[in-house]
Image 1 (cartoon, protein in one colour):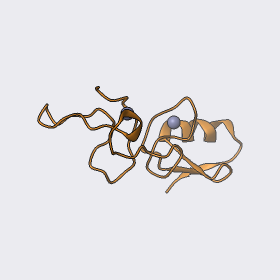
Image 2 (tube, protein in one colour):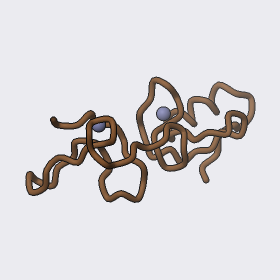
Image 3 (cartoon, rainbow, N blue to C red):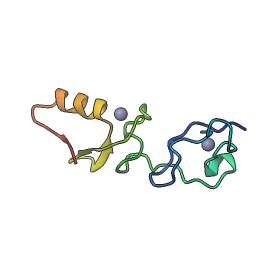
Length: 90
Ligand SMILES: [Zn+2]
Ligand SMILES: [Zn+2]
């Protein structure tokens, strides 16, 4: 089992499910893969971007309408499509 590559919640040392330390430690696994690490909550601050098709992070741009967090690329795209700034970096 090599992990699914899902982004993990901040503060757990590891960033992604399946990460290894140059082969020194066994792959770290998220709960869905039988491990103990908590997956990042989608759209949470510093986690994975809230946009369904996007798994980028850290999501540190706040959307004042959806009240969720987005990655920089998606936040800028949302802002570019609007007449005024909807997402801002916090
Ligand atoms: Zn996993
Ligand atoms: Zn994104």
